[in-house]
Image 1 (spheres, rainbow, N blue to C red):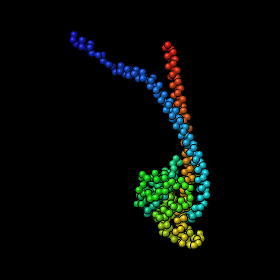
Image 2: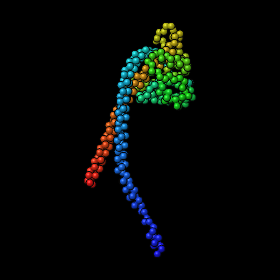
Image 3: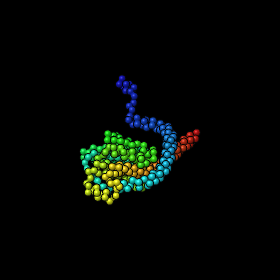
Image 4: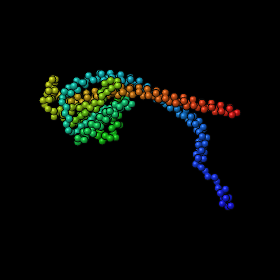
Length: 316
């Protein structure tokens, strides 16, 4: 009798199915409010995002116009400056080049600004690969850098190999006098071997990243006399080549730096034009996608409100 009374006082057991049904009902009860809040927040977020994308598109279009104007100027400077240094470079190209063991110096020609594709990363990659290969052979390496982007991209892993860096060279018009300042530092360091890594302009959409073996004074002094005569005897020098060789070699360094920067600067602006054009196109496509999402969310909100109004009128 007592056991029957105690059993009657116990609460009924809660089944698992009942709990699941209760949770589902609770979630359905909150669902309408959450959907309304979520739609409102989504519409506002999408509006902010559309405005940001539109502003970005305006910026990239403006940057493309600036790059176009600068490209015409750089192209003209390259066309006028290349004939100045080409004769000396062609003269030195006649000398034979041999890969010998010994310390090596790299001159990386980069830009001071970004947003120009992979022109700077390509130069940094060539320097890293070349330096790693030389150090694997037991040859010490030093790096000269022309341009701020080269410093920032190689400072972390190759900062201890830096010898000189020349930044913000593009803020002033590039002249042979500026190139001579860089060449003076190269001459003062007396490199055993020198390689200039830069970008050669080919067209608006194409360029080549080259590693040019530049003849150093030490290499010229240890060169085979027969090969030397074969390359130089076709030219006439007054006074003799042996008297003017030191000055001619310094001038050769200046011409190599001068032409390399002209080529790299033209490549930089051409690639910036292409990059900004692609960025503007991508921003336009993104704006269309976000606009479609915004219109769908707005239509869903309007439809929900109409359903609520109709349901309320039917209930009344």
